[in-house]
Image 1 (cartoon, one colour):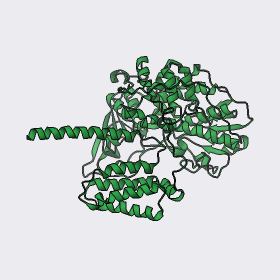
Image 2 (cartoon, helix red, strand yellow):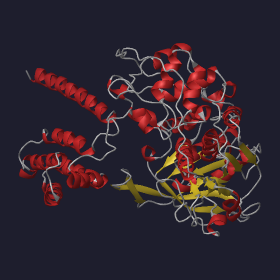
Image 3 (cartoon, one colour):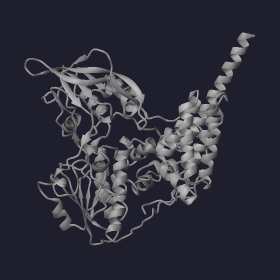
Image 4 (cartoon, one colour):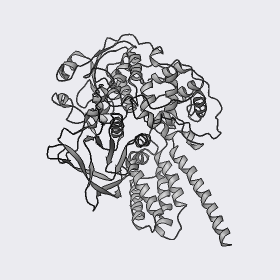
Length: 611
């Protein structure tokens, strides 16, 4: 009897877990544009159903909270009810007997804090904000707003050139993004309600692998407007802005301080992740639109000034990126054996590949730059490469796939160790990194990760010959700050990318946001081009003439996600050749056939192109 009872409970628990997993999928697929108050009422109702009813704050208080939130959503609340709701949530959080009541009330307080503007709009105007509407999740989450369902359907039909041109309507770097995009579009793909997110980046890579983008005819340029725009910085943001401005009919001059265009795509991302001949295909294609003049090896403050640009051009776009590596000012850090990861990656990108044979290398940091640096050191024949991180592995900012690839190639991860001193021998040569073990503490409300502090343990030494610091990047804004255009640090702009108190000057990319992703820089460049066009007195519109295939009936059979594979670690760690394999035709057809066409079903037909 007891055994049967246990088996029955185990079976019931499995069913509950399965149900919760399905609910978690709905949370991940929650579409952008939905009112956060309405969404949270559903979550609160679920939490309220879990209460055991033994304590009043949880049993009765959560019911009252849900009722108050519903009144706000219905437009039937005032500030008095809003303040009462916050006080009640705080009371429940402090007095509930268990985590069910505490966490539910805490989530309400977080929701109010994160979406305060939406609550105020409901109270003052009795309705949702104007931008609340059902949107296509993948397109909404793409910073460049690429028509993703459209190009997936074109890939499925084998129309690869059309797929490339549809991507270029919003993003002139289809090849680069096919290799290195962090794919925010996949984060809320509704396909996960059925099985798993579609491999969108993989399908883009399949398209550009079938046809070189510089062989696909570029869209025609508009008639010349007679307006001239200067773009300072030839990275992804600057070139994107130049591309769209040129298509609108404006003449653009790009000033680039280095000997080649590409910015961080060329000088910050190793060749094994983004082959530079493939990057050149994107750059050659976007320059083919015409109307873009490029001036290489031209540096602000040395060869020209901001005042000259403002005088000679109708508008200026600053997109100088953030290519200056930071270092941690620990003891003895100012040593030839210690340098920034960015400087090392830049050196290798210029073809100067050092020989680390017999040397032990340490990389400090837990982001993608740290992974790129450590994997590059492996390819420079280092005897050992160790990544030292203050936090846990799951709290590292690097993509999990990048961390896994680094470990496969022989990189050792030392987590929860904070660097405190560079140990030198009597000749001033680096011999070890002294670290202080860390202990995790309370969770930070903003980041959602636990804080760390020094643990009551003895310092730990890691022997090494070279140390690279990958702890962040900064911008070289001094020439601009001297002219009053920007402060020392990131540029300050309004929501139109215009530099504050400086008419005609715009800025975007990493020099505004700080180090971010390539697709974010591309999206900012596109937005800046639209705003500069408006500033110049125009409102150019163009729509794609690419005929997107009619939507088929949704394929709802469950399929496993097609994952891109890499060459074996043994093969890839010895050279800088591309490591990622593409999809086969069979895999691409299966994966593209899974698209639910959210642009057609449930959201209304979407218009392609830049507006």
